[in-house]
Image 1 (cartoon, rainbow, N blue to C red):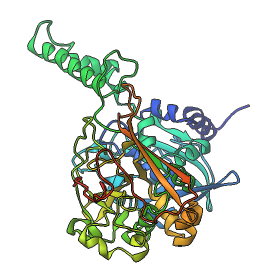
Image 2: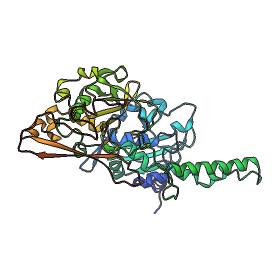
Image 3: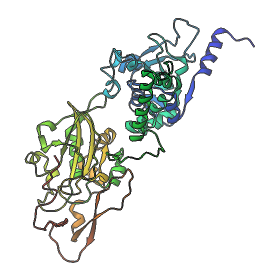
Image 4: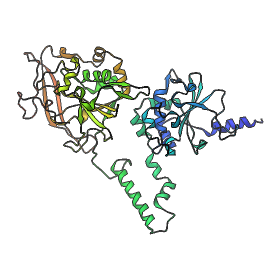
Length: 472
């Protein structure tokens, strides 16, 4: 059987493109790495915002043929040779996205934030899709090897299963599981360059190379980039869980039970304090920096265990929810309606945001554990997807889905027992914190709806420890 040259080119392209089915394979491929390359953020955006998968069919949610997000037609050529193809030949069109010179103002900021025209590596990654009307037939990732051509040896097909895996991850989790930076350090060419092996033994350059390797390895052990090392270090950052779904929010216990206001506060924030632009970025509708609604600056300082509650970032953190702040009176009545002013739980819930100019970078929920500290074990990040879900619900629908029953839970009388005691902890990633166990107990006698909570040596008549919050 004699194959034409065009047929040989097709089978050559088909055999050279490897399919990536798992995150580990994507990590090993090195696509989008190291910094400042944008490929992994581009792929996360594409999987989460650009395609939908239903009944085994993957459909495009934008219009590549109209140039959405900088998409443009890909002619499937390597240089100017019409017969030598990067990808298998199809009668269906290919479209390419990722050129930040074309789409820098259309793609989300997390994709474009490290792009600089002077840094070629910040604009070398691309995604190529094969479309049959609205159906996505194939997805490929690739990178430029020079200004004109793509690197065929670093071109991969992305399976539908991998796209679904990415869609189920938060961006931080996806980036963490595909980070291959330390592997780059141990590539032979990198070691040779770092150790200055082409320099004479004993030369200053070679000594400096050895010192640089030692410093990198030390820092890698220090911050946990190399697993199973014998070097131990007390982490100075809490592990903050991420809530993606309503069921996870309900299971977290945030805002439960009456008279806590956290769930009402979160619904107000999702529906009145944040909106989403065309790139699904979180726009701040309120003004935390001016103190609106009782927002105030949160320092994110080390606590008594030498642990920070939240990651160190280049943005300011702001906290809202303290109903004793004067401007908190501007919050809706349904948020403040159960605030008793007594030493109970009606003022313990907070929302913390990191603010990047007019955008919210991250949103967290937390609760007080004592006068000056938040409970690290009950601090969670709220994803954009979860905020979007909450925005679609009325307050009543939201509270019902959360299982929040308001003061009906107290109709027969109840008391709250708070037992402060040190938790049994070890030197692991979970910070040592004082645990407060709150038990609801049915009582036969009548109790006032203003339920006192005793904390340490604070008398019942004193103002609540959530009322005097010293966290700024």
